Length: 144
Image (cartoon, rainbow, N blue to C red; front, top):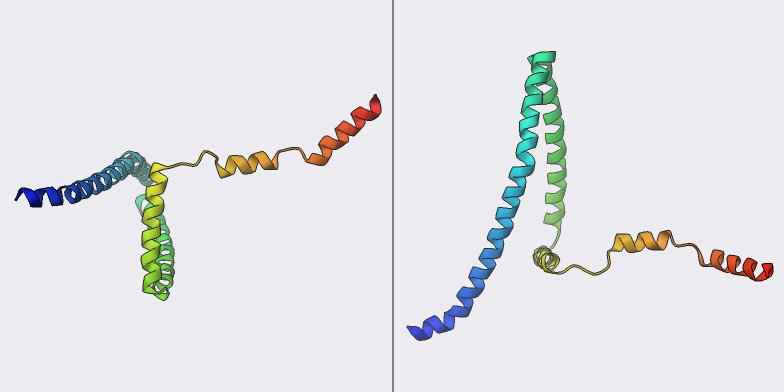
């Protein structure tokens, strides 16, 4: 029995480590949703009640129904296009896409590059052109 426990101990450790990471991600997402969406939902509820008192319940409920149908239709169109695109891909491509997505998210969790593309691009954009520096140097030489 001790031999089996010794053999399976690294496997159990690895599974518990992966499950603890998944639990951390899920709990962080849930707390983020709670602290970001709950205040927005409370403000929306209060705004709805104020609008119903000010403009009348029929007008406000009609507008909300119209907006929700519009957004629901848009979401359905996007979901249908996404489903078609994923259905047109070969199964092994979808599998590698899932593996790459998980791999990319794990790498992004544990490693960040020292340089950031946006700051690097911004520095390159606002750097004075090399010809302007040469022109200033040439003027300085002529002025002597």
